[in-house]
Image (tube, rainbow, N blue to C red; front, side, top):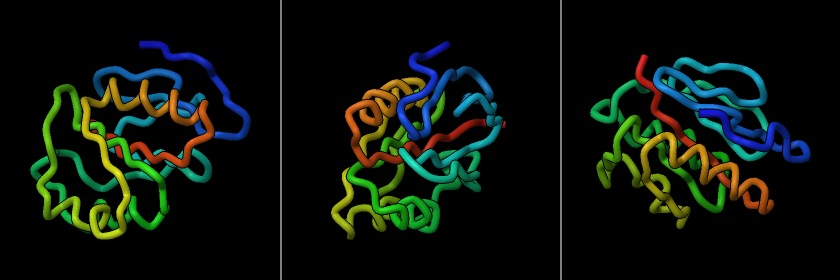
Length: 124
């Protein structure tokens, strides 16, 4: 699904998503990825929700966002509280939704100037 707009100032923008990938700033990513509102988009070393550990969300927490949008894949699934502990301990909000909804919500929050990170599971 194509999302709009293609650019919002100097922020990272998710341009499209679908089975097997997301397009961020015109580049297609076929594996799980961490997308901060500004800065480098980086690979996220997990493929399945069952593999998520605290160290995965520690990587996200170090970016110091206001809120994290966790895209759990094609359907809504929740990470364990233990995996989310790095966010909880820092008082960082986390919203869980399917990856498509996370992509759409991310773009809305970025357009509002919010400091947001999307942590997106992409099955390869």
